[in-house]
Length: 378
Image (tube, rainbow, N blue to C red; front, side, top):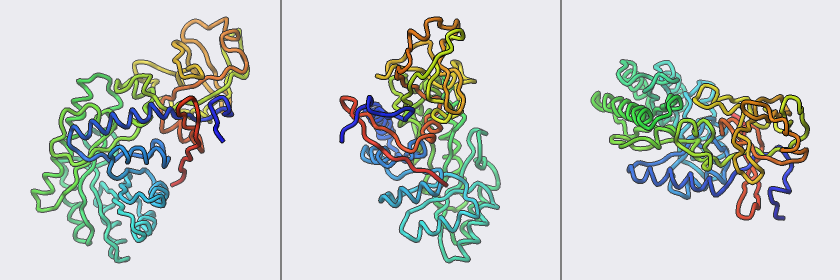
């Protein structure tokens, strides 16, 4: 049975399939031009139809943020998987079970202690893990510095315990803090150079280091060259969001994920329209709050997706969203948005908003929709 947007209950998550495919094609074309393999981070969508579209466009392998994701994508036939979170000892059995079933799983570590735990488990269970070392190229999160002495010690521990050193990987998460082409190009080069330097130090010490993996959506779209890099990872590009719009790597018309919502009431004296999409539908993410333009909890659009300038989801409770105008309250709010009006809200952070919904409604030609399930769990 065919459904259209008008048949959908609210709130629900919509994917504009044409925009999504355009985003996929744009990123893949750029990676092809730069001459590197592309391994998308599928934590943004956690949805097989989205990931299949990325692979069909030319991606090779995927990146996941949980082993549950790895299990679910592997069950659907995807075997080349990087688990891009430092391996906790308690998850090694889960990783081993995946590998034993034929998954070409890569795991990561950024410490001697972590490498020792991986090696100990591997030796005790007669299993060889392919391990990548995470490199910190921007002081953003985790990883070992390219020049740190522990880099070589991690490699030594892994190989002494019979593991395979697959390469190095890094993520320039600090790129989200910039908003000019010059700054993004600089952080992309810093990311590239740091990862390449770490790989060179390992090779100079006699260790094989075949993979040099870098990536974030802003740096992937801003790098001028990727000499020495073998693959790039990026995730949020598939949908984009308001944070990426503020960073400067997408327009409003590129944002493929939105939440469909209905006006259910008003507080006229405050200039509010009350929506049925609260933070349970949008998430609490306020990622634009510290950027040059604050979009509250999301940008309001018509049901057809046309941006309504000046109107935001300004705040939210669990199941209630507050639509208001920026600046002076709109005294005509009830006439402008009568009860029953259906709207779309563009999210601050696509990953966080997607995580609030069990399925996506993929909007295709003539507003026909298809249900695309979403994975959950760790």
